Length: 128
Image 1: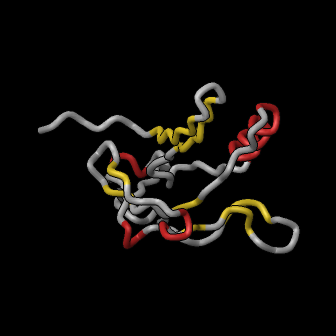
Image 2: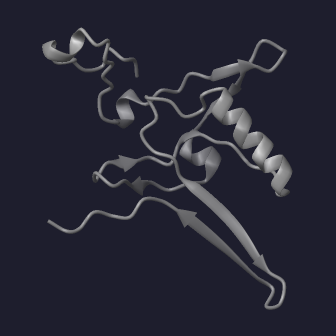
């Protein structure tokens, strides 16, 4: 979804403001982007909800996100994870067109042999 997907008010046009329309599944950007992997392919590609085995999410503004999108798996050791996060930041993985970021973590408790999936997301807004 480009910066021309909504209209910038005339008062703000002189400041070079960009405007991006709210998320809609019909306008979801699916084109690979980011730096090249050395083989001519972009490093970040879109994954369908079926490929990610994800259900939909309801966001803070009551927008439903379909569970598809651009997925990054972080390494399990701290130094490598921080390095990957720095790479994502340096290469603008999240930008003005990003509408939501969801974080899923698998946590293992060796004492109880319990594996827990934690899905971190913004809290729901209060009921109207």
